[in-house]
Length: 324
Ligand code: CP
Ligand code: NVA
Image 1: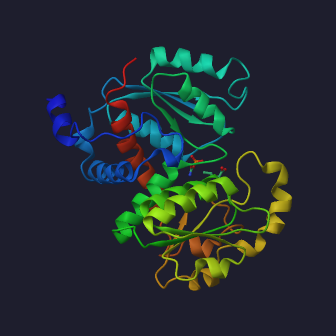
Image 2 (image 1 turned 45 degrees about the vertical axis):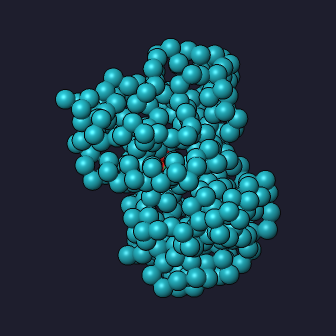
């Protein structure tokens, strides 16, 4: 019965072009459309998928703290009939106790997939290169693809077609910003980024996003003036000024980023009815005022909720055929 339900809820032909999700550029436009479509179905009728990943096991390696990512992956796999093992790796970090390739070669004997949050992006690449099972990037210093999948799914729910949509990212040119630029460019959504001088997104990622945007008609622009960046934006997005691992520079960053705080006044410079977005955790009073996070324009908790649905869709597509 569960097998029949599975067959009718995900069609055989519904597959992703990749075995793992390591970076946003791995996903094609068709992959993104399929993930949004399945996220919508999983969100509408979760009960239909309750046994879809029965018996599938996931290892979740975290070098950094997490509320949303850990909870949504663990609750997500459990609600699909599977099971997750949490591997706390703040001390020692990945590769210190044993080689990353040995971790991968052990895990592939026991579990069907690996979710990994690491500092160095190459760590998730190395896990994937040495394991025969899917690896999912749960945030690295370079990208946060699962977050941004949920973010664009949220925008799709609010606006429908994403082509022609304009999103402004204000703050640090960090992992979340990189993922927004790449997925946005693929989807035909423009991403305008305002950062202080010296905190721009990485040039090579900007170049990749611009090349992708040239094919979809999106524009990927960088600014130093937040007012210029948010002009005409349908959504204004910000993130912490100090990402995990940069705490040593927090004092300086708090001064440099002060003009980039998202306030009611900055929101008023965007399109009327613009949404406010944040991946969370938010540092209220720093990158965003309480007033904005708690305003009716804010969709931050919708984004957080959609992490669950989008990652369930991702796990369904990546893990259903994975074998130990
Ligand atoms: N947005 C996000 O990834 O949150 P956590 O760090 O709590 O997982
Ligand atoms: N840029 C932030 C995102 C947290 C979800 C960080 O890396 O800490």
